[in-house]
Amino acid sequence: MPVYTAPRRDLAFVLFELFEADRLWRAMEATAEVDRDLAEAVIDAGGKLAESAFLPLNASGDAEGCTFEDGSVTTPAGFRDAYAAYAEGGWVGLGGEPEYGGQGMPKMLTVAVEEMFFAANPSLYLYPVLSAGAALLIASHGSEAMKQRWLPEMYAGTTSGTMCLTEAHAGSDLGLLRTRAEPLKDGSHALTGTKIFITGGEHDLAENIVHLVLARLPDAPQGSAGISLFLVPKILDDGERNAVAAGAIEHKMGIRGSATCVLNFDGARGFMIGEPNRGLACMFTMMNYERLSIGMQGLGAGEIAYQNALAYARERLQGRAPVADERSGDAADPLLVHPDVRRMLLTQKAYNEGGRAFAAFVGLQLDLSKHSNDDEEARKAANLVAFLTPVAKTYFTDRGFDGCVLAQQVLGGHGYVVEWGLEQYVRDVRIAQVYEGTNGIQAMDLADRKTARDGGRMAGVYADHIAGCIADPRCPERLRPGLENALESFRRATRELAENSKADPALPGSVAVDYLELTGLVSYAWLWALMVGTAEALRDQEGSDVDFLDGKIAAGEYFHARLLPLATILEQRIATGSTPLAVRAEAL
Image (cartoon, rainbow, N blue to C red; front, side, top):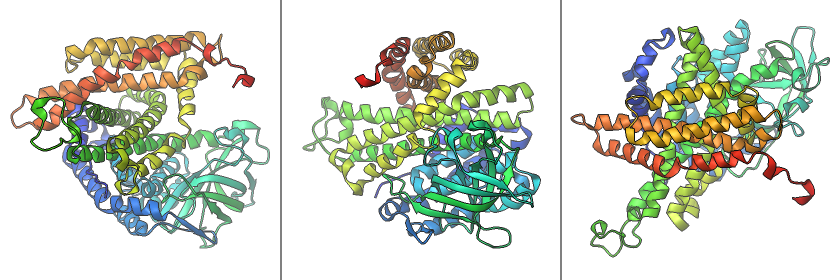
């Protein structure tokens, strides 16, 4: 059976030694009562539940999958008990509003919890993480009566939530959706239409399900400007079943324990959230939350894959070490002695731990945007979140998939065999690059809307932040030149987009993926520089965890030496502009 140990030590390093999160939390009234002891207790308890209740069901849930019969979905054996343990522990409302039964924990902490549960069992964890996002949307845009009615149940896990956007003809282009919402005399609406790819659209884990549905009013304008948002319960307050039902579930490559449903709305009663024709703006609250969460799915997959590859490389005896001093007295040495195996493992470690620090940084910006006492700081943080959310979703999931493939490669033939678990991780994490907006669309959002149309302003603010980190005394002198060069590549690429996109409207889409890759690479680089400096300072202290800190320093050195130079290539690719893609359709 695959192994997994929640990365408690590294999470503590990132939160309290790199970012000094407890000091930051004390400065904000809403998080002032959260200290290191409480946060570490949350991480420890979450890790134990992920390891003991979620992980053992991962392989069996994949093998069994969900079953569909007469409109009902049955989740794999054990899922109900594990979900109940999660819900009863208050985990669904970990970051929820305290006045409605949530625990109000900071986002920096909740992203750490999300990583652990996604690593242990992504299929099972998708149910409550969608509920948390739906609750956030209701808390942000719902009426007071709606909040009082639904949030306590959602935080308790007795009611779950979904987001219903996609239709057969309207995927990423939501302006094409056709689901209708007819006004009723009592102020509610009757929704008619079909939604597809609805995660958790029907299941047996919770008593009720709240569907958050995008639909059009009769007089709505065409396109995305004519979309409204509705709350559609599976069970109405009078106990009657609403006219919404699952028509089928998808048979998928991975995440087979997660029910992905076709939902049919046949005059289902719904209640509007927000203003008419402003539903998409409200839905972005949940979409952006889920994009970061799905990024954590990629990070969690990369971590569990790495742990299993490392364990295998330590035990599997194959070949002799190239350096005589590292050879054992046995007929063969562990895989770990071979440089190419170390390359694969260090690549995984560098991206996983760099991603963990980046997740905490984005979480910090979310906390500041919501709770800072300084309006200017809150505004700047909100803008940084908008700029970095597509980077986090895409870079975490791309590197998570890459990490799973590298781990599979470390195991060789065993990585292709079901019993070792790696092939499931590859299948499960693959969807994270697709849903919540494909990674290509995320890249276009960053390059076009967030950079070209913005004139590079927000990218410049972020670049200035990185420059400040290079000047930080914790940034080792030896790592500064490479980081400075990469930052200049990022600045030049940003200018290329900002200055030339009006004359060449195809430019943002042509270089979007490369620009996002460059942004992610530079983001990890400044964080790794600070982590190396922090680890070196801690190593000099008496009683320090030398093995852990040496591993941190080695991974950071590897990232800067072997991975950061990719920034130069990415800049060169961006500089070619749209010309290489200006190919006649007939020539493809």
